[in-house]
Length: 295
Image 1 (cartoon, rainbow, N blue to C red):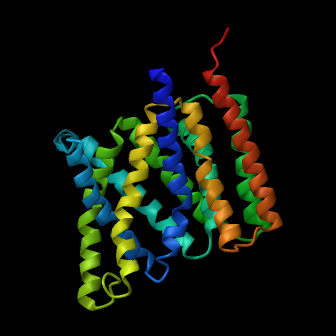
Image 2 (tube, rainbow, N blue to C red):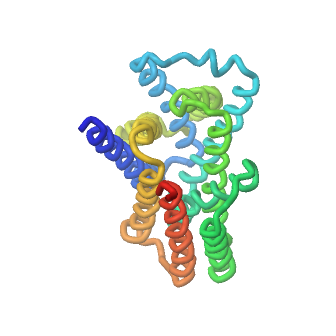
């Protein structure tokens, strides 16, 4: 009974995390009057502040062990740059009316992770995973040639998050504490940018509207909470279940882009996404086969 209760709790946490990531585009759209770099700066700074309180509440604010090792610190420096670049690209894409590309990026992210595992970790791919990798690649290339626009946003999002996960996996770092250190590394630059804007008189904080102020400060919460929920969920449910739930986020992005903001879903989009969805089905089957005990 306890296992079932833990599984349900894990399911709720995971769905909360991926649902929040899926609808985050709406949040950034409400801040479209603010330059992406300024939104990013507020996101980093307020996430840093929020994480201090969250980790103090959990009595886990001990970063000495992480910072003792030069190797770990260097890894966190790289992951900080990767996640900062990922966040900026996402915010820029949403407020440039390219939510469909962000959706594509997070759809192909699992396939990119498989590709990175092959290249960097020397992992062996099954025939299903090779086929999935080929289909996803064809989908991206089709978009580039038929639509006439290379989906660089999708690829930056997929590869930056893929490498982010790869470095975290190799270093075996705790998710929340390492995110705190990552935001701590970026926080001085973010705060300097915010203060510079306020001094020059072109900063958005306390100069546009109370709603804008609330959203800028709240960016720290909407950044940190989903990761906290994800960490809680990942401990309680199997990886294969988590793998299925992760498709909730890009699906919501796709629906929001098309139906809420009227981004065109062209024939090129339909063919490219169909190839990527086929790749994900094969990838999911390969995950399921891994979890089924061999007789």
